[in-house]
Image (cartoon, rainbow, N blue to C red; front, side, top):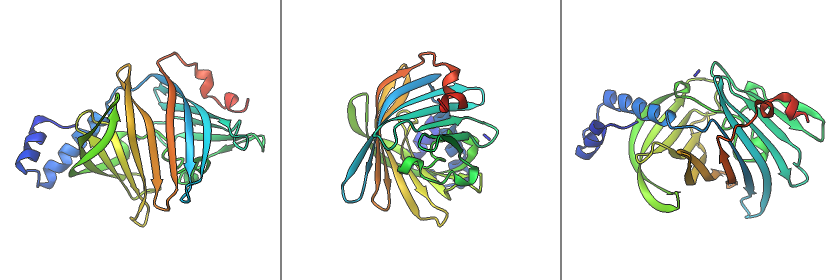
Length: 262
């Protein structure tokens, strides 16, 4: 299955955004511009994943991550380098615009590939605060949208830390089997990038929040350098991307089951 015009800005300034029809139209326009942001044809990075418990204890994991755009969606591949208990674990996603992405996990201790079923995509990825559903690449038509208003967002872009105005957007998954009842998004009016996400479970209670705290522009692509996922139970996952390379011509052979099983 598979942003704001001058009229919208004037309406906010004059307090004239009260009608549902205008809100719905502008919500779709904003989100279409978000999904139309330039994307890297391929990207690779060295990533640190830090798992932090409520008591403050922390476990760092290091991994290599790769992604590549195809006609069918986004393919991605990740390999854990350390520590020893996860070293050699690999995760493959094959994008599918017509349905669920194909996701497979290589578990070296068992010596076999585990396919992530649609019903299992609400599960946590490697004990982090990201689900397998979060790891998929979603598109405009996967949700319906309602514009809720404006709020300030704090983030660092290309070394400049500031408060910027964001649109606050409610998005409801079209797929009834999605793990969330709704997802709130904060989209920057500066660049249409999503800098904050708030996920609600099936009971319509907040489950977690994801913050993009720092981005940098690489070859006109906005790259999230630092991301923090905060679960309501107090557990946190921090991601930091380093040694980022875009459009380097990654081989299709990276994104295969054969490579997963090496």
